[in-house]
Length: 124
Image (cartoon, rainbow, N blue to C red):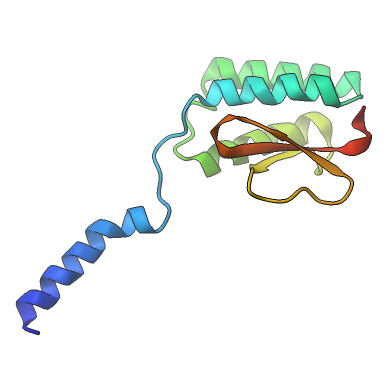
């Protein structure tokens, strides 16, 4: 191969790189996903004090646009998990990829956008 072909192949690989490495655009309807998380936890989580805290946190985060500011689905999941940790103080309650299996003693609730909400089976 000539140097020109090598350069053309390298340029093509650089252009295709972000798509191949999993880079993605902003998540679709992040506030709707947060509302789904909130609604599902009200159905499945028993600690009412923690649910009131969760309601305050999600309302504030939605109002200031924190979920809409997420640049990727991974960042949205990170923001939701941080809020869930602050509200519930239970690391088992989290949002993750729907393709991940639920751990023993956990239940996965399917959310929009390829995510799942993981909650303990004994919550309710």
